[in-house]
Every structure is written in structure tokens, then in C-alpha cells.
Image (cartoon, rainbow over all chains, first blue to last red; front, top):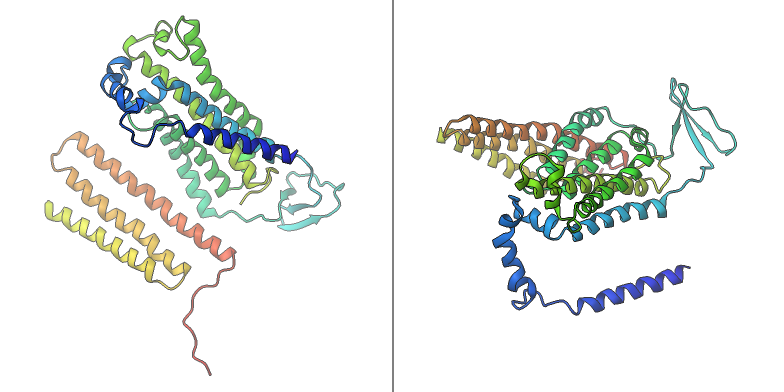
Length: 274
Length: 107
């Protein structure tokens, strides 16, 4: 099985390398990108899409397909981390802490299970007491980071930013919570299932907006067709469509970041990281 | 007004320079973190104060808002930089790194 996987990886790699040979040379003045594509974007993008930010217009409108599959790749990365690393097996050795006294119990018999509640709490071998200063400061900072992340997502079609960046910032705020408290706090606050659903939901929002455009009689991801559905100035409909798409990207990236971090850091056991 | 701006900027640069020299010259992990933390807080405070005053040259509500936003940067750096230094030192202590001492004379 492993050998088969190796062969598949080698074949895919060879195929990709073979494909690279057909690319135009770096900075080739006769390549299609230099002849008409870039000029068209620079001259016509603002006029055609009514989006104030040229970069977003190219990324989310002209190349909406590309960005959609990028989101799918991020989703797949989270999924792969989950499938490869998640470990549901019970641990043989358990550690408990008696909360009032702070005494730590090491249970080697896998059948003996102590009731976790007010008296005892779960512990792990590499448990480190979390620091009060760090906890407090992170508690103050995390909401600001999250607001900033939403600002980056929402402002994506007017200024530098967008779904990927905003999603990464939002995800990093969740990771900060896991680092400053412990991983269990994060997993308790936001269930694993929720992360999974949100990762899929993000991709669904993106694709869903494209499909709605098709239902309205346009091409896939042709945002201008959304105009009857949204009240307001129809000139800005493409910017609004992009905003919806960016929100989807942001949700997917946030959830994928959290899934990847949680699974890698605790080797799939979701008990204690770092 | 300009003199004040220059004074603040030079103070900030002085602290940044001192901090940068300190990071290179200090003998071990813990003492290197000391200038790193100082540089971030006081250096940035002086620099941003200078820039905020410069920004208020043509006084208007927008300029005032921008200056206030600049001080938000200082606020967040003041919160996060010492905490980061603290946690790095904490990690060093937990990992069992000994602090530097002057070598004792033999005998």
C-alpha cells in the first residue's frame, strides 16, 4: 500500500514537471500574459467590474475559478490532517489531578477510569501550568485580533486584504487561545465537529454563490446576475458578490487552520499540545 | 513643533540602536531578551509620539483620529511585547536553561 502510494506520488510529480516544460519562459515578452492579458486587466478591470481594488477584481472575479479551488485546497489540507492524524484510541496511561490539593495521580490500569468533575480533572504527561500574565493579556488581545480579522475580510474588495488573510488572522487568534490556556480549552469551547462543518460551509458558500449565479441565468460565478436578489445600487453588485465569496473563504481558512493546528500539535489525540 | 518631533524621533532611534547593539552584545539568552523587550516598548513609544505630532501639523479631525490610531499601536505593543518576553523567559526556565554568570577565578 505504501509502495503504491509512493508510485502515485512519483507519477503525479513527473506529470506536473512535464507540464511545467510547456510554460512560457520567465518574463517572456511574447507570452499571452504579457501581450494582452495584463494590459486588459489594468485598463478595463475597474470599468468592467466596478470594484475599486484591481487586485481583488482579478483574483475573485476574472480568476474566480482559481480562487475557488484554492479554497478547496485549503479545505483538503484540513481534511487530510484530520484523516491522517486523528487518533480516537484510548490512552493506556492516564493522569488525573486532584483539584483541591493539586496531587497528581498516575493510573496505569487502562480499565480504571476516574470520574472527572469537581474533584478530579484530566492531566497529561507534558502538561505545563498556564501563566496568569499570559492568560490575562491574551484574553484582552484575542477579541481585538478577531475584530481586526473581520475588518480584513470585510474590507477585502476595497483595500489589501481578503478572505485568506482575514481567515488566517482569525485562525491565529484561536491558536493563541490554545497556546495561552491549553488545547483543551479551545476544544471544549469549539467542538471538533463545528470546525469541520465550518470548513465545509466556507467552501459551500463560495460554490453556492456561483451556483446561484447560474440559476439566475448567468455563467458560474457571474456576480452581475445577483443584482435582482440584492437591494441597492446594481453597480456595486460585483463587489458585493466578491464580499460574499471572501466571507466563505475566510470561514473555510479559519476552520482549516484550527483543524490543522489541533491535530498536528497533539498528534491527533486532542488532549494537550505544546 | 518640528524640534519636538525630531527630539522624539531621535530618542526612539537611540533606543532602537541601543537595543539592537544589546541583542548582539549581551552574553546569554535571558539578558538578550532584556534589550529586545525594552527596545520594543520605549523605542516604539517615542517614535510613534514623534510621528503622531508630525501628523497633527495641519490640524483637523481626520489627523487627530489618525494620531489616536497610531497610539493604539503603542497600546497593543505595550501589552503584547512584555508578555511575549515574559513567556519566552518562562519557556527558557522550564527547558532548564541556566542563566549566565561571571566565571569564577580558580583556586
